[in-house]
Amino acid sequence: MDAATILVVDDEQPIVDLVASYLAAEGFAIQRAFDGPSALTLARAIRPDLVILDVMLPGIDGIEVCRRLHQETSVYVLMLTARTDEVDKLIGLSVGADDYLTKPFSPRELVARVKAILRRSRMPQEKSAERPALQFGVLSIDPERREVQHGETMVELTPREFDLLYVMASYPGRVFTREELLQRIWGADFAGIDRVVDVHVGTLRRKLEECGPREAPVVQTVRGVGYKFVGGIR
Image (cartoon, rainbow, N blue to C red; front, side, top):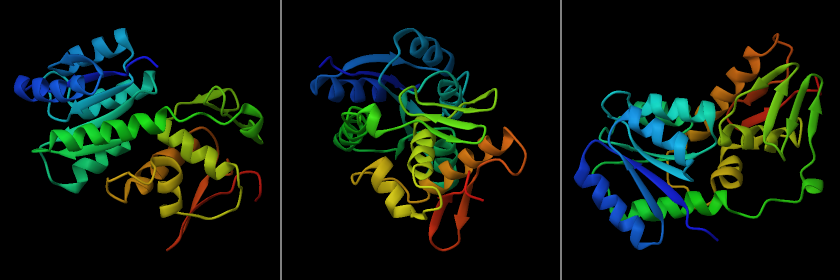
């Protein structure tokens, strides 16, 4: 298997060099960028497997870089933040970040987080016969192409949003707890905040509802328990 390519983005070169040295020692191919515009240009050119992205960047901040990347690609993103405010972390997760670390961080912990993300992304996929395309009225979900279409409109979802939708839509009406969704989609080794499910479900619901009228398929909250997909069964 080819070495995964990781793009490290931070405006502080010592941090970039430190992170790059630890990851290179683990066999990863490393690319570097030091501001938002350069990060976007390089990511579009090399199509990395994962981007390690600082929130505070010159030119374009990391939140906006993450948002733009997920409009164009399904790249995995691990965000770095010097802030301890949970709101900032939730904002990062809401635009598609897969995990985050707060500075100062342990380089060994960062390597472990990177491996965990890539291990999930490189798990053998189920055979297409075991992951059928799903259809609910005008909403279609294609797991092979990882595409969601509502009528004539393609719904642009991040990798985590797609996985959430497919898991819940595979069992219409079933209530999934947050813990079940974390286990199935982020994996047992996810060490982020538990509100990550709420954030991703919120953006998923908004994107689906923006595509059609209120009676369009949606994900509903079951208060005190979790979430369920109700499209096609109401």
